[in-house]
Length: 440
Image (tube, rainbow, N blue to C red; front, side, top):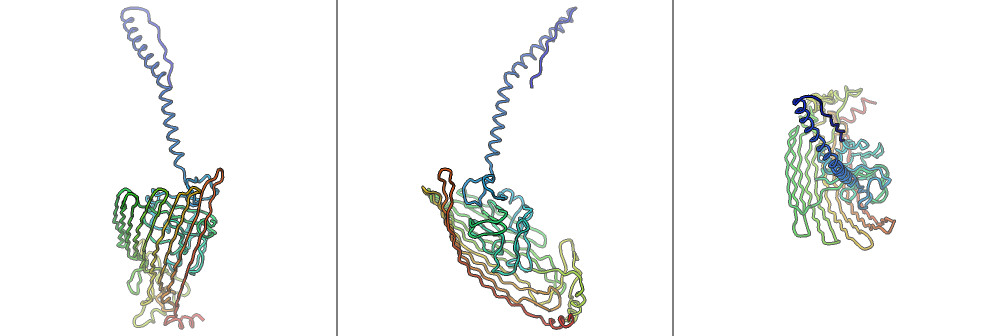
């Protein structure tokens, strides 16, 4: 803001007074000239500032949140009646999101829980709505889609993820855009694609309980219109639940992922091929007892075990340190939760005069083997001896999307052929009869 400049009059009397007044006149004239220039320059400066503000606002407005789940291009969050949250690559990297299980820290309405099995006992709820079951044939209420391919069982979607481009959490019931209806929501995962600029990265991290993690990726062109990407991840960590009877630790991590991508672009044609293989060989999942009415009975049976007395139930809690727990289990009754998950997918896009055509073909296989001490105590009462679940699924999606005047239309078809097999063996232990007799 330019202030008013007041010129003072010459004071009367003496040379000294005139000299001082001359100095004042010189100063005031200079101030007047500067102020006049400021008045002339100020509108231009204000105009430039306004232009910069408009440009900054334009940049901010152009950075619109685009919804990926509607299967259309450049659709903003304000343009669809859909409750969704988009997590971009920067946010996912800063939060160190490595799997869907860890999304709880970024989305309040999302909850991921696991029972006595990581592969088949995982439940996801959105806004408190979800389904939980150890039955492999049970349809989940929250769907998981990775690069356009639905993971028909939650256990097949919670493995380690490669570098991510975005994750979209769609809240509420979703229609057939993802192949089938889901009553609670969809977690739409988009991974990083191959790039035509050569680049590689590698990281090694150490953590508690002898944790080690290797993450390596490389991408680059193989021709003028084709590029590839390779991701390799290996993670190992000791368990944090210690068995006082055998000294073995449980809830460890032994996971690996190998994923290769190929992208090809030729004018209106574009293909993306993905092949991945992951395996988890975890000693999982145990439970820690709290002392109750049957604690004395379990301890008595464990002490009578042969060839040596055992502990039935420990006083759970942070017995060793702030993060490690003591527990008691029956020797020879293994905890096992091995997972093999692999598949291939081919996405083809072509720009037609009628609209944008997309085809996604995929085959996935999911195989798990589980064993558990089901009474979770040192007494030999009940145990699972090898539960084997397999799932082979083929999916084919085709859709055509275009714009005709004011009409934005989308049509398509989805085919899924799924084969599920489950074999479960639960056996009584050597002390099951004694335990039931004493209770009865």
